[in-house]
Image: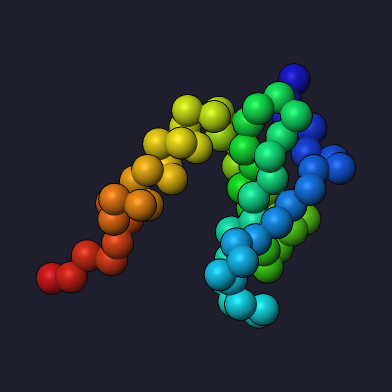
Length: 70
């Protein structure tokens, strides 16, 4: 059985600007975290376990996902 996202309260970072490409996030009742594309809210969403989300956030803060230059 899949995670139900109906009724999830999705939000964007306060640093996001209107019309920009953003990740929307929802804190789920089972402790998980949902993520979706703000431009396509009816599209697919990813669901992360709490530890997976924490690892992702830590990676972002550590610069693991910065653009690589050649």
